[in-house]
Length: 127
Image 1 (cartoon, one colour):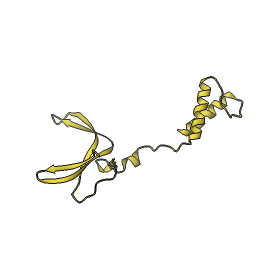
Image 2 (cartoon, one colour):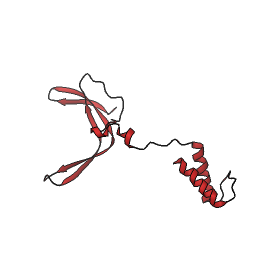
Image 3 (cartoon, one colour):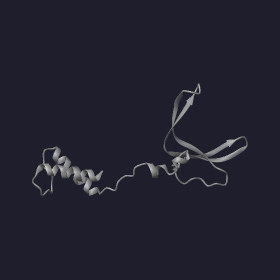
Image 4 (cartoon, helix red, strand yellow):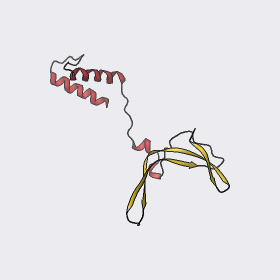
């Protein structure tokens, strides 16, 4: 699968896996102990295990490299909202109608300013 292999040190062999990190980590290097130079963006790591340990089932290592990054994707990144596909399609159709010079369908109110505001409110709730 291109993600498993063997890590060899001297005569010892250990199973290893390549795992994706939950976010990109920057690495820095210094030449004079005062100025840092960015050297790379790290997005993967090699996990070396003991011979008896099972290989990980997932492709992404969810805990990152340091203790503060434990469950980082679950705790720090925004979740996608639950969207009703029918509502999104209706709003897209109404926006296309408005942009082409038409009006909003299925609207009972005759005031044009209110219909645009209500459409924006409906569209705002989707995102």
